[in-house]
Image 1 (cartoon, rainbow, N blue to C red):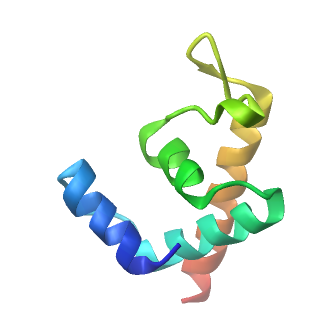
Image 2: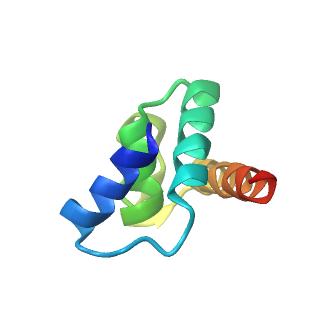
Length: 86
């Protein structure tokens, strides 16, 4: 995942300007995707739009599962780690 992909997603799909560092977000998504062997786009959609990743059961009856919360927290932790380093 690249910084440009994140910026384009915000601009074209969400029709809004990002409030957070897109560079740190891209790094966090790539890092967690590699660690968990998941698709980067699916992780981005989970974090930004709360879209379920059915293959790893992130949602049940519209609510986050323990696994879904763990993945989101990993993404957030990595994001803040990269953001504080820049």
